[in-house]
Length: 155
Image (cartoon, rainbow, N blue to C red; front, side, top):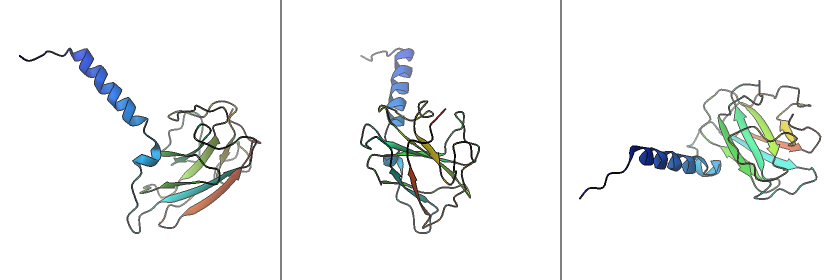
């Protein structure tokens, strides 16, 4: 005897599965770059008041435009759970990318959205949050270092 599964239940289960997959850490979705692949490695040190750990991560986003605002969609994101840690982005296709970084000061930020208002942030190569970030050209050995604190905050 075949059991009938209502279409709504099937759709709900499908969406639930997609939601779970989308919540996997960005690092798990990255693959090891092939020799000569274009990538970007970002090492981040947070020198503000908080402690970087699994609940208070540093978020690193890559964008294909320097016009980064709350409505911008990143091309990649990763978290760092240890101060001075590294995010490695493999197989980056745009000829140049722009890096935005935020510290999850209050804990519990799940990504997939702009950081909460008041979060410490920095754009790579920008002196203030109002300045545009500097471009980074992906390559086999492209690596940048960023140090930031609590001086600049998400609006």
